[in-house]
Figure 1: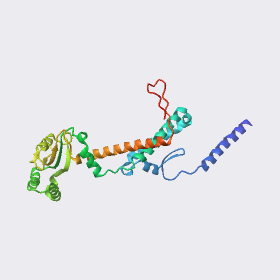
Figure 2: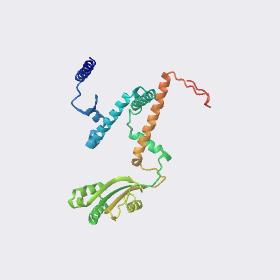
Figure 3: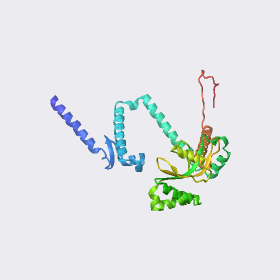
Figure 4: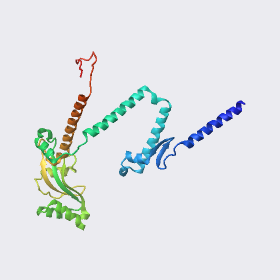
Length: 286
C-alpha cells in the first residue's frame, strides 16, 4: 500500500510538472540565449552595443558573459541572497545612483551646443589659462618614396601654388600618386607627436608660409610648409584649443545648471541636517 501510494505521488508530481511546462508561455523564436525562463533577445544585444562595431567574437563573448551572470544570479536567488538585508540595501543604493544619473543626464546635458561667439569670447579673455606648456607648430607635410616626386611638388609650391592645389594635382598624377605615401594639411604638432626628430627640428626653423627643402629620412622624403610656430608660454591659435575651450564652456554650464537644480529642489523640500555631537562644526538646520 505504501509502495502504491509512493507511485501515485511520483506520477502526480510528474503530471503536475508536465502541466506546468505546457502552460508556460513559449519563448520567442528570436533569442540568443536562455537560462531556464530567462531570455537574452537579439533586440537586447542590439540595444546594449553598437551593431556596426560589434564583431561576431565580441557577440559570443557578450552572450557567454550573460549566461554566466544569469547562472550566478539564479543561484544567488535560490540561496536567499535576494532577501539579505545588506544586499538589498546595496541594490537600492545602486538603483538610486542610476536613477539620479538619469535625472542629471537629462538636466545637465540637454543642450550641448556651443556657438563660435562663445568660443572666441573665452579665447580672447582666457588669459593665462590657455598659455602653452610646450612649443607647437602648425604645418602641412607630405611624405614621398621618391626624391624627384618630392622636388616636383616643391617646385610648384615655391612658384606660389597653394598647398591644397599641389596635393590635389599630385593625387591625380599617376606618377606622383604612386610615390605619395602620406599627407597632413594644416595640422598642429608638438615635439612628442611629430617624428622623426629631424622633422620637428626642420619645422621649428621655418618661417611662416615658408617651404622647406626636401628632407631625407629613413621613412622617405618629406616636404613641409610652415603655417606658424607658437612658443611655450604664448597664447595658441584658436583652432589649436577650440575643443578645449568648448569643453570648458560645457563644464561651466553643467556646473551652473547643477547648482541651480539643487537650489530649486531645496526650495521645494524641507531639509534638515543634524550633525553628531563630536563634530566640531556647529549644528546646522535648514
